[in-house]
Each structure stands twice: as C-alpha cells, then as structure tokens.
Image (cartoon, rainbow, N blue to C red):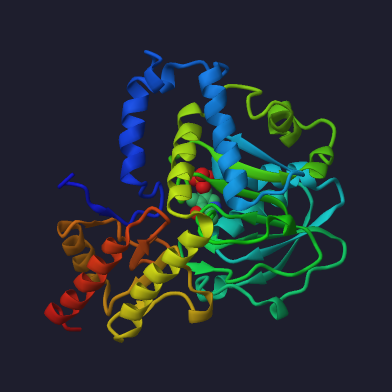
Length: 361
Ligand SMILES: *Cc1c(COP(=O)(O)O)cnc(C)c1O
C-alpha cells in the first residue's frame, strides 16, 4: 500500500481502502458464488440482497422515515435537475431556487423548462463565496418547493443549517450527504450523485416522500417518472449494479465508524485543522466567507497564480493529489469527504507551512 496517495479529488472522490480491497475480490468472485459481482443477474437473490442491504443501511444511518422511498437511479445528479421539476411542477406552477453555485444554476436552467422559477437569492456576482441566511430571501406562498444545494462543491460553501420555511425543501446533497445529521422529514426530496461522498460514479440516490410520487403529470416518459422506479424497487430496468454494491460497502464502513454523528464530529475536526492553517497567515486566502464555510470542500488561493501552480505540482510530488481548484475560480481546493483520512489533512497542513516558508510572496 506504499504507493497510495492522499486523494483530495472533488469527485469521484476518495473511498475507504478496505472497501476498494473488498470490491476487488467481489468483482472476481462474489461471496463464493463462483461468479463476479458485475456478471451476475440483477434479479438474482444475491444481488437483490445487495440492493436491499444498501437501502436498509441508508435508512438506518440517515434515519429516513417510513413514508419515504429510496431510489437508485442513473443519469447522474444532473438528471435530477430536470426530473425534479418534470415530476413535481405542473403547468403554471412555481418553485423557488437559491442560486449558490454552478450546480444550482444548472438546476435553475432545467427547471425553467417546466414551470415558473423564482430565484430568491444569488451570490453569483461575488463568485459564489457565500450562502444566504434565512433573512436574506423570501419564499413566495405559491411556491411548490424551495430548492437548494446543501454544499457547493466548487466554491467550498455549505448551508450550516437548513431553512426553516414551511415550504417543502428539495435538496441537492451530492457532496455532503452522510457528512452530518439532519432531519429528513423536512424534505420532499433529497438527491445525491454517489461519486463524492458515498461511492463510485454511476448511481444517484433519490430519497422522495411517498405522496409526491402521485404528482407526475400524465405524458411523462416512463423512465423519467419517480413512481416507475419506486414501484419496482429501482429494478424497472437494469440498475447500476456495481455502483449500488459499492455504496452498500461504503455504508457498512460508515456504520463501523460510528455512523453519521461520529462522522460529523471527525469532519468538523478535519475541516477545523485546515481552516486554522488558512487563517494563520495572509499567504493563504479562503474563498468562502467564514460563516458559509464547507466541511467537505475547502477552496483557497495563494498570493499569485504562479505560486498556485507550483504549490499543486509540489504537493502532487509529496503524495497530496487532486488539489487543483475548479477552473471557474482557480486556486486550490482540498476535498476532504468522509473517507478522507485525518492524517492526510495533517500532512497537507504541514506541507502548507513548509511551502510558505520556502516560497515567500
Ligand atoms: C458533482 C455535482 C453534481 C453533478 O453530478 P453528476 O453526477 O456529474 O451529474 C451536482 N451537484 C453537486 C452539488 C455536485 O457536487
């Protein structure tokens, strides 16, 4: 294992090593069936158990109430940008969106194809360096839902708490699902692409309140109706078997770590180490306003773009991989998802101190 690097990649992101090892075995020979996991029928009893187990663990870890369905869908988190308004908004209906980054903006663009979209807040003019507090926007009474992106992966901002509006919340949690505790019952729908904090690319988890399954307008294509997948236990067609399996293994690992509350505590510690290093010197500048800081993605700049290039190159040589920031804001970004080890954060902080000493501005 001497060649394994610390992987700060924003997504697909790092996974627990023990999960990778187990998956490597199961791909070749799953539970001594004499068959590899990825060549097995999705309707075999072995694979049905894999899916049921993943769903059960997710329900347990997130304390998902019984009146919610858990779906394993394809098409990436991005397909939810249109599936949500397609299913939940009818002609002439309205919804409110908070524009806190590129992923929110893309969702707004798609939603406008299906209904009247009220953008109640935007931090675009300040390069999305913050999320709003509740006093900063209003949700009109005729909104069907309030849509937000819990954690803005590119900018490193995160809603510290969720809105308390009486409107149904719809939330993109792609980059922070399972990183902290919250009350699922405040949400109509939660979705997350697995590849940031939960598994490999290829599956999107959708958690939807049951009564919403009846809202889909007639004429919606079968594959794009949530009800189709809910009624068929995510097996209407061939599901992304391997991805679902890995999500299940990650959830087992997470449970062993003590569950979401334990994870939240570790995540807070990891992020605090890194923010303390940023705040200790004007050499490093965090992108996010302090009140909006993310526990998952930490975007920061150095004194010059040249120093940033050098920083990323030398960090890579030191085994600290994937620190290049998103092209839209440049600089560096450390993604420290659930599976990212604390030692890696400590190493990065040491590296940052050394780099500053050796490369004065
Ligand atoms: C990565 C990401 C997406 C897009 O996910 P895809 O699965 O690539 O479509 C959407 N929302 C957020 C918050 C993300 O981080």
